[in-house]
Image (cartoon, rainbow, N blue to C red; front, side, top):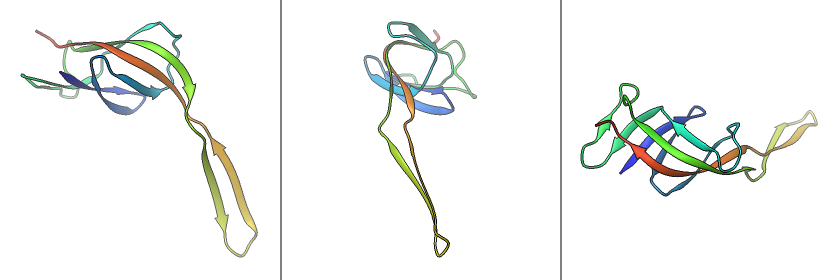
Length: 104
């Protein structure tokens, strides 16, 4: 069974026992977390939400907080000596998906 959940304005395809990285949440390692914005549950009987599947939840545990690799942003305009170089590291939360609960 798998599910599509929404978090931080993004959608993630998750399966039980899988690790996912989502945009940073205010949570500490070992905290339990519940996603209630479930858009789709796939399996023998697929459930499609409009926009969310009612009474469906995805439960998980926070493994760690971290920063992704550095992305370099370079702006350039020709002939005017305009150059700007900046770096960015996106913060993320790593989660282990424990259980996908579908409505009965």
